[in-house]
Image (tube, rainbow, N blue to C red):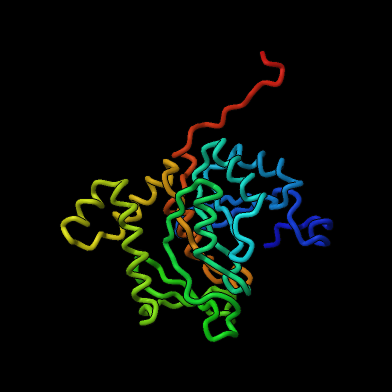
Length: 254
């Protein structure tokens, strides 16, 4: 469903006005507000953040954290909006997942928590191009079918050349969770595999408190990585019942 319906938006290829759409996902109703990314229309973002329960912040794997990214991040901090992140355009020349993570840490003073790492980077026509993602919770490689426009995907074992990296990233993930959740810490200390339900619960609590921001990756033009982000919205972002009522201000001051 195209949300950039205004003729000016279609002509310029950018979002100017915020637009809302509703979609069902795994028993939940997700109300999505698509906001502009250009700094000239940041008032639209401010109005939306004022009433949002949670946010998905999209970063380009090529451009990384841009000036408007910093503006939106500060606005989200102002309204204490929990957020998850997606590093998009992993199929572009010059894509760098790790570089964007470091920029999020340094330029936004944030705490990105990768739940996925990419399999390759750059155009898929290259031998080492972007082909899919590795889920660090399930430790599975996920690949999407281009012909189905991303509706069909499959899980496989992690390729051998990525297994060491995946184990390292998973260890760092649970190191962070252990410092924020005693149950996860106990499971790790006892040498047990942390149940995925416990890990999801710990990530959710840390996300709602603003302690971490879960990070996903993909290439939305080819519909790669969309379903895990929707799962992230369902599992980690707050429902309206988790957030306090929106407070208004009477302009007259009375």
